[in-house]
Length: 177
Length: 402
Image (tube, rainbow over all chains, first blue to last red; front, side, top):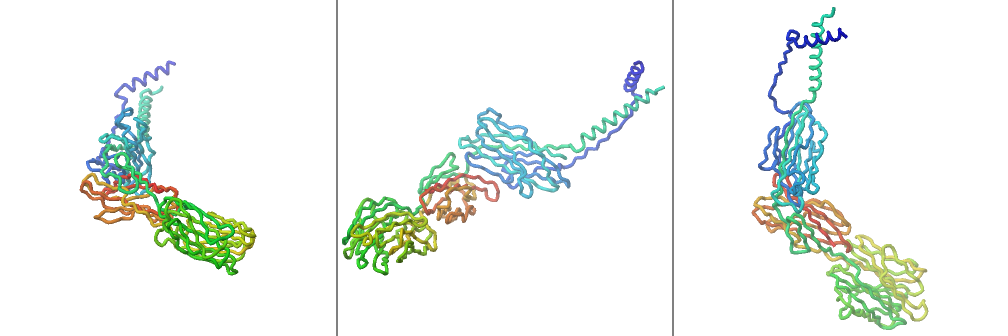
């Protein structure tokens, strides 16, 4: 028991003493590089939209009682020489649940389309009354090197919708570097 | 003696290495970047409107972005039948016939005469006179069959009066149909005679969805008649004078719609007998044109490309012709949806210009013909495309075709 007490005390003293530390030097080098996976404008990027490599605001319309499809509003490009995995994750949406404005939307749907035209997954917001049904986070999908995928969008409002109502969505595209 | 300083130093170094390794292992392969996508969706009044046309019956729904169009496709349909006989024989036969009010009517009359030296001199329906089609006389001179017709018989009830060239036992029957071509209504006719229990006659039909009327005349009243495939009996008359072997039977049947090529009317008798058969095929009326059922109105100054795409349907097989096309005085016509003999020839139309300025109009025109009087639905998207883009809206238009 004395020996254990002595050992612990010694350890405490030794660890508290500056004399027992090694000085380990870590010198991280932070280099500014382009994102491996980036947004870029598509053939159908709506007027007034802003598309930066890491941030895109798409100004979409929704017609009452008619489906509106944007085949190529946003490109997602993997400019790296290696494949990267990515997923879509819902972050926020307004108007919030319970707001009567929610009922002015039937469907806001996004399609992830591979370069060869294959539909990879969908990410769909629907409504029930005045509440949103938000999409679950998708699985990770691997974008091959040097490929351009497309985010297609489709909107629909009910016949009873009022014009000028807006829905603001924030979606995170999580990319594994 | 333990060197405590050395032990503690070693422990400390080991801990540091472990922490470093743990940190490296947890970091390696799980570096992320997060790209932020922020769609802003605004409910907007659509830039192109659907509006009701001047033909058919159209219902336009909210925001003028969907419509239902009701039209009628002409088809041949049976209307009514009448028949009679002159008992033990006379120089005429008459009976009452009530004709309906449907469009594009025709009356066909079949005659059975026991004495073959006697023929029909004339047939009238009220004040209207019928036209002779053909006669078929048995080689043994035991029975004669004749066919006559009348385009556009008056609707209502009137007497069919058949005047013979002499006295004979005779029967007659009349059928009226709607949806029949009013100019050159007869496609083909044919006839034959024989002695057997299986009278039949084939004709080669050249007009799709024609109907056949077959008249069977038998030189006795003792044999019963059963119908051939797909036939419907419309009348069966027997005379009453003398012995059954001295009497005659007149039996009228029809079949339709039929396709082109060889078509046969046939019957089965309860025993072998002398018979004469006359068959006529009559053609459906031409397509009905609805000019126009809807108009497409540009409500902004932008230009658009438009087209129709059929995405669903029901009872398509009855449509001999369903053509839906765009029309404008500036750009002419563009066939968009084309259904022929129950199958799509064009399910998606070519792009058509809907230019600015505001209130520029394009028209939707429909041409229809069916082979029966059921109901078909063709569900169509009106696609509105921004020129040189792939952004497009889809308006739903339902075509109900009775």
